Length: 563
Image (tube, rainbow, N blue to C red; front, top):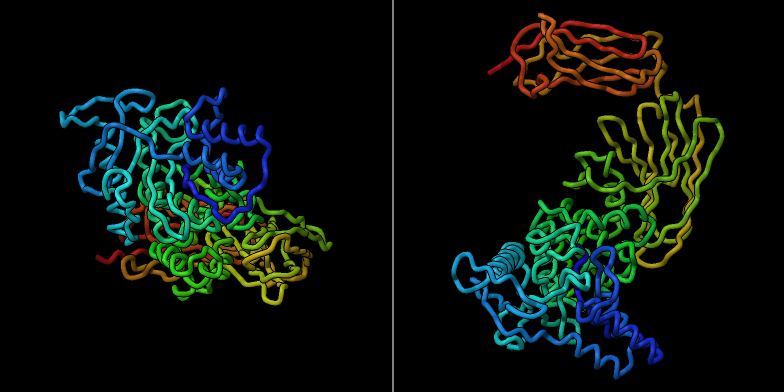
């Protein structure tokens, strides 16, 4: 869902609007907050933040007063303290903000409010109790006490899921939260009802936590990115964040910290992938360390991210961005266990530029990326023997230049030292990918040019004269003492479909391994002694059979299973 952190941009310049334009802008704000009917139904849930940011920056004094009135805390007649005592929940049982009055447990509190309270307490325990973030600043009793105030209102008519509103200027602020009264409106299609409530609370409460560290408008992208990440930390089964990744991964050339809530591509929400990367690569505590650093510095400058990341012994923000760019290639159908995102097989894929290098002619690609953006250039050997010469020329800034050598079972990452690489025997790989990441912390439009030339004579080993299957090693294979046995074979011509079979002496299939496309060269495959069900086989004699294009061969091996 598109969740709202309502960020008052005190530093934005004011732009004079006509009276008619001010009225139109305020009407948009009222509609986004569900305070008036807009006359049209949004196609999907949207973020009201852009309206509030634009209004605060652009309205005149009278308009800002009307905006402040619209953003006053709702006056709701009923309230309930959560079991932990951390939250005061305000609600109504009549009117447009009414909640379902069903009270199944007979505690004289609507079941929906009970659920909201339990969810809030659970999220507090996670974010403050377990992850170690400081509790949100208190508001001096503005809502009737020092508990954190949550208002249950009808937001679905305006298309919002919820928002968190900081009430003071400066670098830190107390805040209050608004949540929808049922999450059943037609606009809620991606995530509804209880799941919508869960991830909304996780997201919005993290905004409340953030505002206790730093609330400046220069950190809007990180506020939204890390709050969207927190949804997954709290409720990993929901996966609501997946809907935002397309606008991020399919535009890798854009800056990590670019975009705004005005943008329809949701880039600042897709930037949550960077928080996921930091979490998986360096540990979950790094996200908190970044917020603590921003709080100490009173700024969301990228140099503070760099300082926090360096505390993990890494190469700072630049080193992280180079590795982040590599991780982002291995999503969707390219998903690999290492590097990996837990849900990476469900992500969209970055779109590389393909260079046709099958003829002995230099081909080139050029483009531009913004700071903390990246570009990908793909070369496909397609079983052609020989190699390739790659050169990458860059203009300005600081660059991370890496080459991914991708085969069916492995990934090798090499730095493009000096901007060039002579790669012999490239037919060992399914893909050769050049990853260029601009690690400068500011600036846009940094240019690059990649040139690649195929060289059929750039081989790493002679093509075998004959196809052959070698004896496995070790043999006998002591299962339990040794991890695997290696099976080597030569192919004198490319094989577009290659399979290794293991049979018992009775001829029953024990294991089938699809090896896919294999080049005309020497290869080695391993067998770990497991059958098709993943269970270790017993002691005895087995036959292994290699089947490829125009070639079939078999040999026997012995397994000794040690208890």
